[in-house]
Structures are given as structure tokens and as C-alpha cells.
Length: 234
Image 1 (cartoon, rainbow, N blue to C red):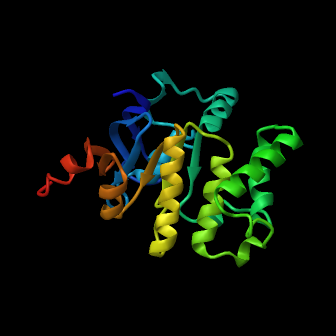
Image 2: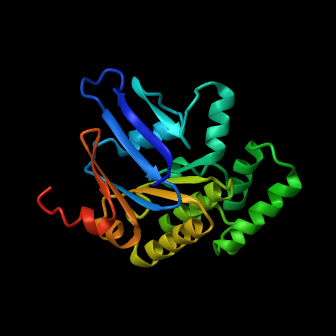
């Protein structure tokens, strides 16, 4: 199974903290899959994602993108972040401008695109994700589910090859959760690899086609959902 991103014996310790957040993490995110990354709080899921977009750098070990080691110079990180998009658990950390349309356009503008292309791509993602009625509203008037969809739209507009989501369905009602998962399914059908960190075992089992389980900064198991969840004692 071809990996789009892989970690090889990655270790990382936050400054001033004795225990490693990642402790020899070796795992593969298979290309073209819907991946659920499971594990209790503090197992390293969010730390992995921050490594995946180059915000954090391993103390030792390495990450690879399509088999090539990730570089940490400015040009390499810029190229990586055009290919890998991250949606944070709290959309308030991601939405910074007054309206959804402004926020989506801001991300595109940071890519250095022409204004005509920015408008076209923003219009397309707003329409595709059913946000037309919300696009001009003040962001602080939106519900949590709506804000999460806007944050997802802003990242999808950048057309990443790998989409990472940190607890995307947390605190959503069932309707909002279904709408969000439908958007992720659609992204995967378009060729985007989707990896979502989640505590929701029902979502992991029913939505994902590959499951990674993390424990104490390591990968404890990996495989199709029916295989992973059949190992009940573990």
C-alpha cells in the first residue's frame, strides 16, 4: 500500500516537559484512503499533525512525503503546506476574518493567486459546500457546525493532496456531523487523502477505511476497521 506520508522512528519532546510526545513513532498514511487516527488524549495525535505541516520538527527520526524526506527550509515548507491542509479542532483558531468568503479568499490570496482565480475558486467552494447563504454573514453569527464547515471549505479551496482534521466531528449534532462527513467523502472521491484524528469510535468504524491507533506517542496498531476493532482486548 503506497504511503502519501510516513513517519520513521520520530521522537519529539516539548520544551520543559520530561515525557516524549512522540516516542519512536513509525506509521504510514496510505494514499487515497479515509484514515481515522484514534487514541486517548495525550497520545500524540495533534503533535503528529503539527509535524505533518512542518510547524514542529522531529528531535530525531524523519517524515517523508511520497517517499522523499521533508525539508525544513522556507521553500520546502511552503511547498509542503500547499500539499497538506490542516483543519484545527476549534474553528475559532482558523477563522480570522469577518465573513466566510473573506476567510476563504484570504487563504487563496496567500498562495499568490490572481484575484480572478481567487474569486472563481472561492465561489466554487462556497457553492459546492452549500455555504452561499452564509458567505457574507459575520463569522461570529455562525453555529459551531457552520464554522467547522467554513474552516473545512477554506482548506479545501487550497486543493491539498492530504487533508488532516483534528477532532472534526467533536461537539457537532448528528445532522452537522453527517454533512461534514459527506464533504470528506466527496473530497476523497476527488483524490484527496483524508486523515482525521477522532475519539469517536463509531465514526472511526463506519466512516474510515483505514484505522491507525496511537498510544503514548507510538503507533499501536494499523489496519482496516474490522480488523482493528476485532482486537477487543488490545
